[in-house]
Amino acid sequence: MKPAIQTFDLTKKYGDLVAVDSLNLEVQQGEIYGFLGPNGAGKTTTILMLLGLTEPTSGRLSVLGFNPLREPLKLKRLVGYLPENLGFYDDMTARQNLLYTARLNGISMVDAEDRIRKLLEDVGLSDAVDKKVSTFSKGMKQRLGMADVLLKDPKLMLLDEPTTGIDPEGVRHILNLIVESREKGKTVLLSSHLLYQVQKVCDRVGIFVKGRLIASGSIQHLGKEVIAGDKYVVEAEVPDATPALEEIIGRVEGVVKVSRSGSTLTIECRSDIRGKVAKAIVSSGYTLTQIRSHEYALDEIYSRYFEGESKS
Ligand SMILES: Nc1ncnc2c1ncn2[C@@H]1O[C@H](COP(=O)(O)OP(=O)(O)OP(=O)(O)O)[C@@H](O)[C@H]1O
Ligand SMILES: [Mg+2]
Image 1 (cartoon, rainbow, N blue to C red):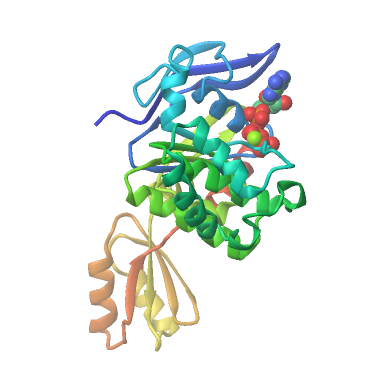
Image 2 (cartoon, protein in one colour):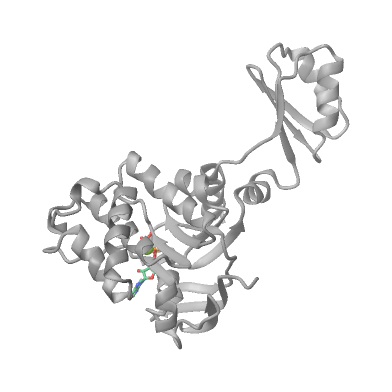
């Protein structure tokens, strides 16, 4: 299967400023990919190039098999875009705005009415269907933006900070809609500063700094690369753990370091030796209730990257 998005040394310069620097990105079909990075990192500029709305300075790209600059109209039908700054008609209602989108996209009016009602319900705007957008809060507009993207039933969704300004309940709605879209085989690229949300829904993430994609991969992969290096971190739950047990585990071949916080033992090893560690715990007469690989948190990874950046 061809990737949904492929870029080769994609670069965008504004005068002397390199907004996007030799980006090589591949997003697979059916994947949710998260763009992370501080303000001005180049996330929006990349999305605009993928849409054919900004011309690259150099490099090549393919989106759903099309060149966005050469075939923008074909692409437009297949791609749903949620911009950073939403443009709705203020003096029209939520429903009227979506009907307008439906008409532009050749959706029959009979279908459109039903779908719009359902979508506005999905994004939590049932009570605001016939209210003018001029009376909407930022979060309500953002929810309407998601409904607008989904109305087209696009193959690929490019969402620039989809949950900014939305309350926790609304965020849950939106994230669910994104995950449901993946279940329907759609590809989603989203940009965000909200690490916890990205961690919850994305299959892979890319970290952008000053126009460069400095890392890309699953959270588990980035965690290993950035934090653990060639170490492997195992966590064991032992309710009756004692300092003596720490010593026993420390003597297991391949264990580098053992630390304990209450009943949780954190064991750094040279490879995945969960079996050996479990055996040592149980055969010494302790109760092992769980043993697992350490799951990295994206904020842990992200802050390590920036610690590294500020030192270099
Ligand atoms: N039209 C433009 N003209 C000149 N410079 C621009 C233009 N658009 C973006 N830039 C610059 O390009 C860089 C990348 O901007 P971009 O909007 O892509 O960042 P971003 O990662 O989306 O940031 P944010 O998280 O704040 O949305 C910034 O330094 C910005 O000032
Ligand atoms: Mg942006």
